[in-house]
Length: 215
Ligand code: AP5
Image (cartoon, rainbow, N blue to C red):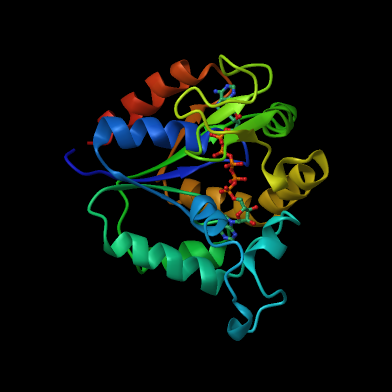
């Protein structure tokens, strides 16, 4: 498959960003991630879209979903510029899934399965580089020098939404809004599941093989 169109699904902390980085490199596709796109525009004024809050930040810091109109526009624009892609963080509810069906076809929907307590542990322990976005973990994936990114020397920080309270809220939102999306793809027979609760390289072996099988 020259330019696959892949959807990666999973709960917060399932490893979507980690595996997407590997997919991007191996299969030469764009990484379209609504989370990163929104973090880059956290203080954008969205008040003219008839939203409850005035900026994405106010939704994200509470662990709530940013309104569909904002996110749909981001994804539509990114998809219009990509031949192959891995789409990470979208769709997060059935309305977004319906919107996506009007935007593009998919070659594969891939689900990373990880248990709840492991998710909480991964997210509350995650540290990210403030410069290049590389992920670390305080126990499982430490940098050579504490607090400093191995890749670029940037400062490692905790994401505002990685506190335990907000992580629990994000998981609630996931169960309520995003699990029906998973069921939707499963009912269509379009979903491939991978056990995401193993070391990143073991998960990657299965992810890579699943994409190659879909070719
Ligand atoms: P977003 O940034 O998409 O966050 P998320 O879905 O909650 O996912 P994460 O980035 O937290 O986790 P991940 O699955 O990518 O895991 P990662 O690889 O980083 O969204 C943030 C917010 O934006 C939302 O809450 C919402 O407000 C808004 N938003 C985004 N999209 C939206 C949409 N479509 N509609 C509305 N609102 C939207 O890994 C996590 C940690 O685990 C890291 O420390 C990593 O090193 C470690 N790790 C990864 N894999 C493994 C492994 N196999 N073993 C051990 N550790 C591992």
